[in-house]
Length: 420
Image (cartoon, rainbow, N blue to C red; front, side, top):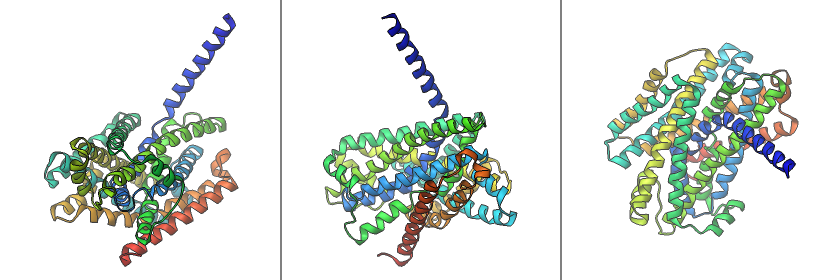
């Protein structure tokens, strides 16, 4: 009996140490996951659910699998080399080439920031009826405060953004409870792919092709640096193992939120014969159908998404600029620069949803660059050491790159030609 108690005590101690060790490494992937539940995802997922019921949930699952693969490779590159992806490009490619890479990546970060800034502005407008221009200024101030907290350490920013992700998860949990979806149908359409018609193909391509965000591929390789304390091969392998757990937890939370958007939209809008194409429509329609709690939860989720993803876009822009061309602009100045295009759009009355679609098109052009850069670097043993990509990993990396790039090309074609 005494031996048994001693054995149990040791197991409890080991479990406690293991939990503390995991908590130490949690954070980077939660920051990155924000890009996968940004306002752009709200619009596409809600449209898909309202038009095609549960039929496109499988697209969310496969988007998430590809995103996990690419974010894992980004984190691995950062851990193995001790540098982020833009810094490694600066070391390996000519200066002129890196200036081109920087301009392309910076345009991507700004396009993302524009969409997410507009999402936060819409959230404030829908929740509190603050005029759009003032909501825009307030969004800028709030995201500046989040970025400013980096002064007190990356962990503080990670905590704030993780809390905002938690708010989004809670809000959509409330939505799911109120919506009362058909769970057997949800399960079937999650596992069995299907495209009902040509229009569904366009929306599926939009959901899948515009999910992986270039700026967070760059950012993830930077965020892991703060935890690279043991640079031995065994230390890097342990760090990578823990980061994979971080990615698994955070990205699957993002998957649940995205799936919930489609499920709620199908259970509420499709069921009642409503086709919803804009975020404002979704918010207004939820109140008479499910009550003020549901529309309030939706507005809160959108606001948290806009604020957190806008802050992440600003942080990514800093990483890109410093890494590729060794330029450094204070966060508050960068925040001001990226606010101006969004405020101009709001002031002159351009539909925020149209601007959001155009930003997704810009990202479609830019996405191949970080994927190809990452694949080229991660295959080199002299740079990656024990974490070099093996043949199987390279194969799946190239396959995913081809799929994502092809889908983005199709998305661009549909966007410019006006349909299927």
